[in-house]
Each structure stands twice: as C-alpha cells, then as structure tokens.
Image (cartoon, rainbow, N blue to C red; front, side, top):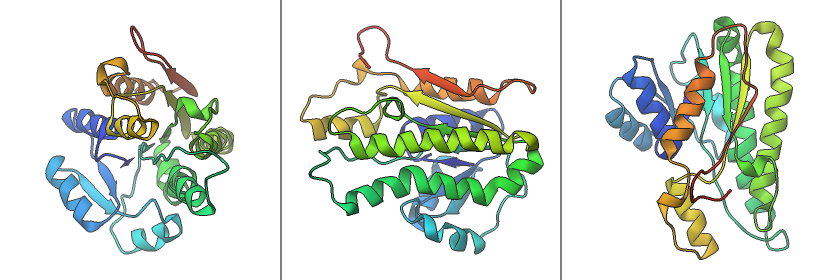
Length: 229
C-alpha cells in the first residue's frame, strides 16, 4: 500500500516494486488521479481517498474493495508550504498537519488489522526536517517531528503483533517537491545538487527487505558530493 505514487520518491518505489512482481495498492486523491495511476502502473490497484481530509478516509474506503492482507504500508505522500510562524494562519497549519501527520495516522489505524495479520511493515518517509527545524519551515517541521513521534509510538505498540516500523529521513531530494521549495525560496533549482530519488527508493527497499528477526528503525539519507543538507 503506497501513498504518493504519483511522482518523485513514491513513483520510484512503485515502479521498483511492480517490476519485481509485488501487488500494489496505490492511494489516489480522487477518481481522475486513480485512473492516471492505473494507466501508469499497469496491474496496480487503486484506492481513492483524499489525504487532505483524513476524517473522510474511513468513509471513502468503506465504499471500496479493501485488500485482505497488507505486507507493507508506505507513507510517502506529503505537502510543504514555507513561511514564517508569524505569517502562518490556522488554515496553513491544518492543511499541513492533515496531510503529513493525521492522514498517515488514520491510514495506519485503518490498515492495522491487515498489517497485523501479515506481520507487516510500516514505513514513514519523513524528512531531515523531522529531526531539526529551520526558519520558514516551522509548520512542515512540526508535522514531520510529529510523524517521528507517531512512528516511535507505533513501533512500541505493535511489536507484539510482529509489525515493524521504519522512519526514513531524506535530505533534499531531486523531486518536483524540491522544485516547488526552490521557487518558494526564490532560488535557482539544479537537480544535480541533490539526492537522486533512486537513492531514497533503494534505502526504503533495503529496510523492507531486511530478513525477519531484525528491524531498521531510523535511516537518514544525505546528499553526497556537491550537495548540502
């Protein structure tokens, strides 16, 4: 089960898993997006649910066919808006927290029965901002710090059910989101300065493929060479 498969890291993960024969269920925000994902990832299943409205996810999924077993739940989708604390309104805070924190919590709750049955794995693609907060990044960093707390608590609660939980903290990665961030910062964007998405994809799959009896809890990925964190 993957969120954020439409672009960037999520799309890379979906392609790699599909190529090796995994059965995919991709979460799409609406029917039109679900159709696009089904066309891009042939053979994948789709579930329609708007992560920006986590309170409606249970209702939305209740009208669709749910998988009986979930071996892994990959939270990759996210939103970002930069701005000073003194400028951000409750609307900005609520939108960021809903998509980046409340929706992953609700999705996890809804799929816990299937994850427990499978002894599954929950992966939260967090951010370097989940470990530190810089000026203009307050709302995003708060949502990602919260996501780390969610993962840590879930890991302790679900260990008895054999559910593994991993947080991945990529630094700046060459994705469409990074382009948007550079526009907000008023900076020129050079994809070559940042982490290749495929490197983060490989990190995620490494955690997923770890043999039973071991668990990777936290993985940080940083730009190498010319890049900076």
